[in-house]
Image (cartoon, rainbow, N blue to C red; front, side):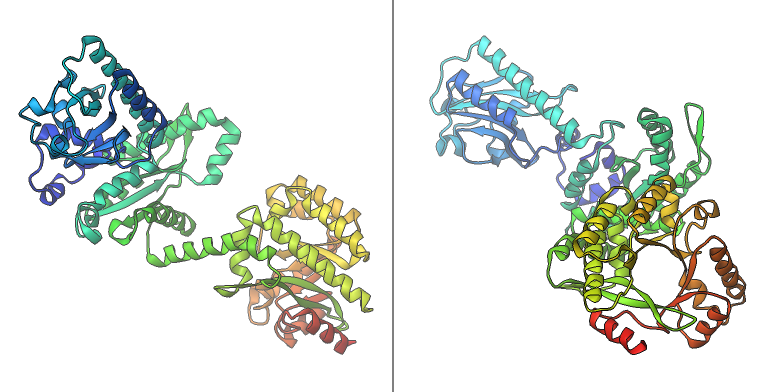
Length: 606
């Protein structure tokens, strides 16, 4: 267990431990726990050492033995099936009491071991030699021992030296494993794996949170958001950022005092505290970061976020870190300092992960995804001017999933590109099918900002247009204003490529996003779609009544045909027509519908 963790509540641990070992033995056991080596997987180097020991000393058995409170456990073993023995039967528990190699020439003649079950029964130990596994601080964790079923008259000084040298190799290996597996290389703090291991130890203090773990709360501090860190890396380099992170860690440690701090992510640090003490500590952390973190003369004003999770709420150790990170993210998104984890957050996170992981299978399935189409009309004539393709998903377990849920999830990953390509392929295929039936129906397809990052979008458009042999003008690509804020130069280039194919382009959700007119005036789009939030309340909201005419006028002055989204009443439709808006779309005109129903709806209006 992380040694500093023992400081957080000695009174609690004392009440949960009876017949505690001596202080010296407690220290030894704490150091052994800090290695997190008990009950771990075999290690190839330790196995090579025990194999070599058997060969060098001519014994049937060689062990890397670690002596715990009630047992000895073998990190490596040759010639013995059992993974460990009770400590009461352990030769090694005697060997760790001395600095030198302990040699037992004949166990049957040694009063300490003559009646030992390992001597009187299997494996029938007669000869034993054990060299202590000793840390740099002189703490003996166990031994490297060799065992034979035959007694020996001597174990030479050279042999003892060799055994000690092999034990030093094993100890060096254990030190390396601890550093590599349980220590953060930048800060030298215990890492996420170390926290998980410590939580496993705490769970042993009491069932179902009734013991020490039930009296503790886990806290995570995220010192800055990902965008700020990314921008810092771009501007100042990773070497600078590493120094900044160490400076921020020092500031955090000063605020917390003596606490077992862990680094569990690039910018996230966690610790455990009593339930009645975490709140004043968080307030100290807030005060510590109310000013700036200064590194190499550059001040950084950080917006920290804190996640709070009572250990008793986590049924399994593996749930804690995801729950902490979820709570910290919720705090940051909500603009508050800290957020306590609640079960609905965890269920929502699990549900989101299930959906995200199911998207690749849905893309390959023949019956999970389909398109519906929502018409847009010319407000002057009422005739259909095209349709917008809208993706739908019926999950085999969760049923119909709202695109408002799974599309934002996909947009956070590279999966959105695959989703967009699926919609492109099937949207163009449907437009071609309608064209073959004698009706040219323009189809608009939504794309995300990430779709402009590579050539897939333009290449797929070109391939599908050639494959289906339809006029490129029947296809329209819609993107939101947010895409303009990511990389406007790249966006301009991609749109020019799309326009060269003959495909139409629309700026979607205008007014609800970035709204930078200097970008907007240079976008070679065909349509400007006013966001529905302005249209739906236009009949009763004075501000919208003033804003919408200005948006229509602005769009037309910039050369766009204007589409109003969210038209839900006939009165709204008449007002928009009176204001000079060319096109409308919304539930008051038509809801999204299947391809067959779309055909019938358009035919009925002709």
